[in-house]
Image (cartoon, rainbow, N blue to C red; front, side):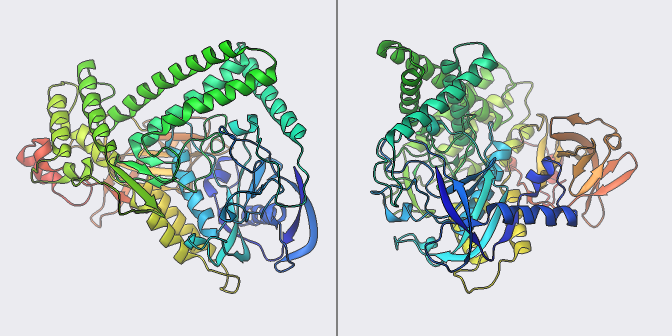
Length: 606
């Protein structure tokens, strides 16, 4: 859907995703490259819909808004209400597009995006892109427009006199692109909507989607496309539940057809497995699977309707088969990641079943409590459990009666009986993966980012260097899970920055310390690691190479001044300071010897 936008007069780059650009061969540490990328971003994406002349020039450009519908068909909008598609990218926060419909809340129709929300989305996207099984659509850059806005709804406190930003991300196809928007009848502006155009758009998207699935599988394209999407979505749901990362709900408009997450306005890093609500009328955390059957039914209907085959009975049978696959995939994935909390996925079947049973029972007990969050704060009617969370009991030296104590006791006993398990590995891993993520707690981010960016139009410029440090710290301190990290090690500390990670590891309390390294491969085949280019031959123990990333295990030692170094073939490399040092489980859980107890009681890692 075309519309006219004006050039923003004083736009500048507020934040750049150096990790994303480095993966694609653009090293922004080079001043010339940084300047060229920044100029391109401002030239291509610093455009907005503006009713007045303040802050924009007379230059105009035609941008495009992508049309899409919804599973329930209740949205009055016809697609992206504040997003412009520019080539292979999208610019979010450009103002109201012609696809904004009448009848929605004014706070959902103004088309603006605060700089604070841009940064919050970027932080959540980076954590989820790195950790979730099917990743997330990243924010590649954020522009500061120098403009400001206030939401028409006063209760949207963080959108009052807020600095406007423009968020830039890759364009992706969403399942909602294959659904109709039947309530988009009365646009806010002077655009004349055509239901026939909406039908044609739906038909075209489905034809391409199904054709691609048939090409890749040589099977029924519609069923393959639907099943692949649902499998990816339920794996994302299961991982997010185990890790307590809640996107706010899995809808056809906030995932790609590959299952990648996008749009993080309602994302929360939760402290436990309690049933959390962040949207009034939609299922909360732990109940995300309730959104899958309506999605299956909607897409199966549109596939059948616009592919020109399939009667109602066949349609119902197809949907039931995909829902069965979804439930099986969810259960298997939840079990896998739950077992991984204690490094139990590779143990004996009896051990796996016992640990899974205990964790599932505990999850369900926590789900019986309910909390409602508003701007990251729990409301008064919430029913939070008094004893809190497994992580707290894991670190508590004194035994206190609680569900957490009982669950950990049962898990520790069954792990002790498995000859392939050690409590040090199991509980040391749990101390990392069960640890809350306060740096991306929603309330913390709202307050921290709001304080870091200027408000209004006359409050000065954005300090992009300070913003970069703040964003990087929030991302690094939030990391807990590395998909490529091998079993058999406890992580004592980690540092992470722009695609580089260093994890300080041990296999037992008094053993030698090693560092698991991960970084980005550049075009020349060299390895990028914390701003340094390293040849593959520098790692004598070998390097595992992936399409974009590499990882290796290397020996490490600590100097008398507490600085950690890794040993490379041609010398040593000093590691950055740790972002997180993980607490040890309480000694009572480990049943450790006196020698082990002395080591475990040390404060510094190692």
